[in-house]
Length: 88
Image (cartoon, rainbow, N blue to C red; front, side, top):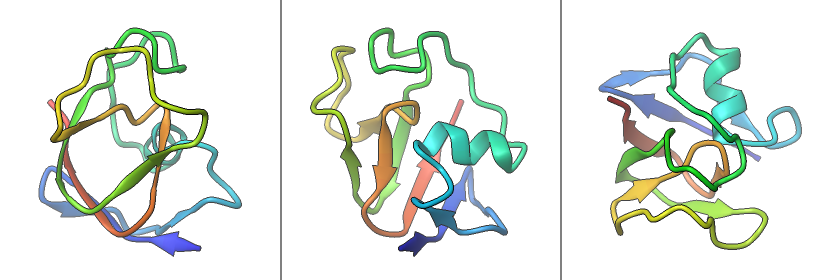
């Protein structure tokens, strides 16, 4: 299934396809969207982004890093719907 991804107000041209990308971070990197990260496995929280709209799922259970209700860890999640995120 594919979903549209909007980052910092801009729609990413290619849709997220979970058959191609294992995580939202991999998708963003494949589309030249710069994301700060360290662990790539939900431990550190360095890739934290604000989820403005949509839903994600954590494919390996809940991440260990602390995140607020409106935040996601792109290194550890995949979209369940179209998503709109803000990356600082």
